[in-house]
View 1 (cartoon, rainbow, N blue to C red):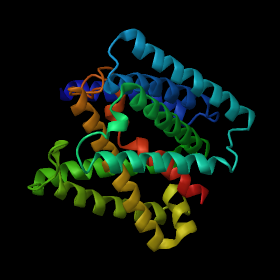
View 2 (view 1 turned 60 degrees about the vertical axis):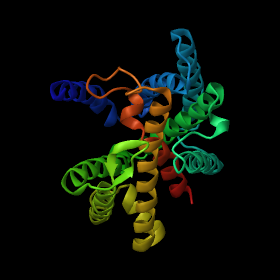
View 3 (view 1 turned 180 degrees about the horizontal axis):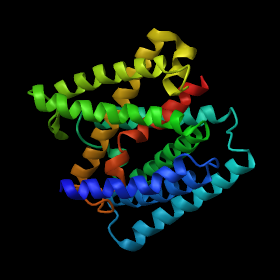
View 4 (view 1 turned 90 degrees about the horizontal axis):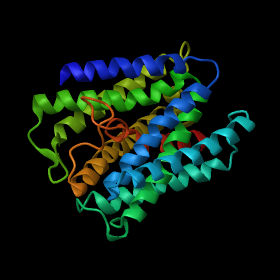
Length: 280
């Protein structure tokens, strides 16, 4: 399993790195579009669709809408109008509503148990995450990576913190592997990471130095906590979807890692919220 995970990670890096630092954002946007389209098919599967034709339909429809939005972005020189802040707000509120109605009771609300309703929700949320990712890439590869790394730092810290001190489970009925100690370790690690990012601002302007300029040090700390909560909740929400569907992984595209959604679940609610914060 470890060998599979390492080999898969190396292949992904070989695909991703050339697009990250290319001057034109288009190659990265297209690569992200392809992966998210696969993620849309996986979401439809978790929502209850089984046949290959149905999964392909949702994936291709998602890709067609994303391609149209990509063309629109190019016509606008990759910049979104200020009105998009309402889109980020709507998506963040949709996430907040879905998480708030699902996680405390460890089950999906009745309104989301129908495959079509849950699939349409995923359609919107994946479009929002992809658009936010492209907008972050437009502002620079390091700018984008500084935000993504927050989720990676939290994940690594939670893993080792849970292994070392984890006794009490965070959400045993949804994801038995997650612990409260892991969440606290992730909190400490992400606050430290954000502070490091701010200190590097003169040389490497990044997402957290921008937030620090907008909201000050105390405001930055509060927003890092909010982003972390969204990341943990996004991970738990996908675990809830898998549990409801009776599946271990969202897909099999990435050997040793599962599906695309298994790799980006924590990022999905974080990305539109991150763009909303920049637009405030």
